[in-house]
Structures are given as structure tokens and as C-alpha cells.
Length: 444
Image 1 (cartoon, rainbow, N blue to C red):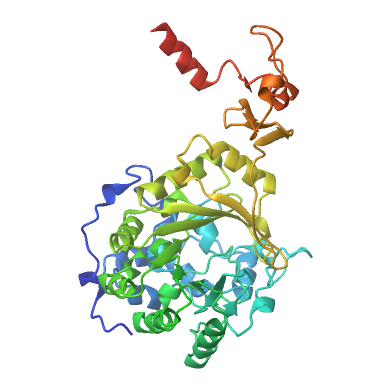
Image 2 (image 1 turned 90 degrees about the vertical axis):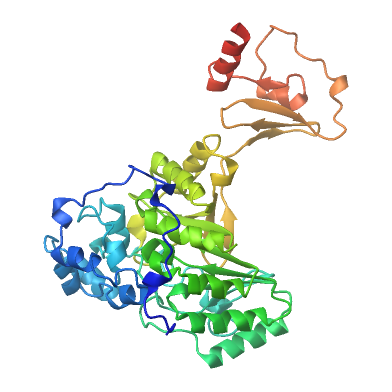
């Protein structure tokens, strides 16, 4: 293990919880969630030791009953827990506010009968990662980057996991033999400049074991960037210790992508973990999954993106839920994601707006899906739409605008065709908030 007597000494209190979301999260656990065991454990001196959190994960339905004595255990819950692995850290369990799927933390962590819904278009490996593995554990899909599955262990097994076929089925880490095979392949393919260390969750590995992986990758001259995908700042933030960040510094440049899905996960503990990583000089991004009943509400997503930016975490991707067996109840129509992006644009800084992507089934890779901002094109002009619905005529290079007769001022309202021909500059709705501000200013 890491050779630390206790993480309590390694976790700094220099990052105050007032950083974000003050007053936005419930302060009292609902009566139905009250658990004597939870209260007792959260008061122990070991609560902030990540290894203690791993040892005390909820792994069985019987343990769920011990933690939440008012939980109604349905046949569906039992069947889902028997089919897909269950693990919840005590910390993440403490964020549950209601013992039902209406609670986002409960829905993402506790098995549900809906996971047994199995339409024919779902699969165990819809992204065909196994077919893109030249050596075991290394996915090489894009020309210049590869993904290394370093472990199949997570602190908490998300019910919407893309790798439900692997994660938690057998908790293991990459062997020395497999790592040598990976290094050999990367060395023979210098076009791969970027390696993503994923899993499972690499931060569940003992630090010395994770360091062996990072050292092996950094020793390959052609590998320029190392990225790590982890959800531990969300599900087990005490994992981010000074010992861990000091080790990571030795292998820069490193980027870390996190996985926050709901504002309820933006706790002071999570903020502290992110601050420790950011203060170590590690850029942080976030990859959310659009999940029905959890974050497919426009206001919820806006709140999540704002909160992440306050934590110095850049919203990077918003993923459409993959076609994985066991996640059909979480999937949303693509139209909802497009609507989400339409809503966020103009309401949030560009820094806070993720890219909505579909990871195409069959190994097609990530495809960005956006609202249509190009309305019409012609050889001389392109008609663009902004977030307010205002249409603009953009002249292309060498556009022969001078040869076009402009519409007379105060005459007929321009059409899209007029914009595409360069006969008008824009079509402006009269009652946008920005237009009202301009009118008010002109009257002052």
C-alpha cells in the first residue's frame, strides 16, 4: 500500500467549503435516510482515510439494509445487484437524501430493477473496445492517442457505467506482463502521443502501483501527454492526498478528467480534492453523462456547469448515454441534449459549456452534436443564428456585396434569402433582452 499511517495528516484544510454551493445543498438528511451506522462511521477518526473508505464500501444488498434500515428492497433491486457489481463508499452513501430513484445520488449508486431492461440494440461492448485492443488493456482507436485500462476497480460502481462488462466483475490491476506489452506497443507506434489512463478508476490503485504505470508511460519518448480519468474526487475525495499530488507532479504534463454529474456531488469535500489537484498544477476537466431523471433538467445542468467552474474544473464533455446493457432507463433522446446545448449557449461563459458528444456505437468514436447555427449558405454569404435567435449575414471572402442592391431602410422586413444574398445584414427580433437594454441605454 502507500505506507501512510493515516490520510488525516495528508488532507489539508486550507480549502474552505465556502468555495461553492453554500446553502444550495440540503443540510439535513431526510428522516427516511437516517442510519445509525452511517452516523457512527462518519464520526470515526478513520473517515478521511481513503483506504478505510475502500474497505468499508457497501458491496451487498445485506449491507445496504444495514446502512439504510428503511430501504425497501424490491425483487428488481435484488436481481440487478446479482447481475451487475455493487459498491458504494460510505462517503458517497452519506450524500443520499432520499431512498428512491428520485434522488440523483441514490439513482447513480443503488441497483434498480430497470437495469434489467434489455432491448436488442444494447450490448455489453457497444463501442467495440475489445476489437480495438492490439494488446490486452490498450484501446487504440484514434490515430494519435490510446486508452489504457489500468484497473477494473472503482470506489463506487456507477449504475450508468459504460464498462459494466468489466468494472467490478473482478477487481484487479494491470500486471507487470501486461504493462510491458502495452509499453512495447506504444514504443512501436510513435504516432501515439497521448495516453489516457482509465479503468475502473486509476486512483483506487495504491500510489506506488499507479506510479509504475505513469513511469512506464513517461519513459516512452513519443508519449507527450498523459491523461487520467477518475471519479474519486466525487465518490471518495479523501483519496486526493498530498502524497498523491506530489507523486503526480513527477510525471507532468498530466491532465485529469473528472466525472461530476449532478450539483449534489459538488460538496466541500469534493471542492477540496479539486483544489488540491489544481494547486498542484494539474489542469482539470469534467466529463458528465446526460442521464434521464438526474441531470437532463436544463437548470440542473446550468447549476452543475457553474459549480464546476467555481471549483476550477472545466466542463469538457457532456456524453450521450452509451448503448450499454443495464442503462436504458438513463438514456435520453438526442434532441434533449441538443436542447440542453441550445439553452446553455449565451447563459454561460464559453468556459463553462461542455461539448455534447455521442460516442458512436461500433467504435466510430466521439461525434459532436450541436444545434444548427448555420441557417443558409450561398457563394457570397452565410446566414448564422446566435443564441437569441438573431440571424446575421456573414460575407464570405471576396463577396461581391457592392453589386447587390441593399433593401431600403424601413421597407419590407428582410428574409433569410435577403441575408444569404447580402441584401440585408441581420434579422433582429424586437424583444430580446439585449435589444431592450440597448433601447433603455439610448433613452438615458
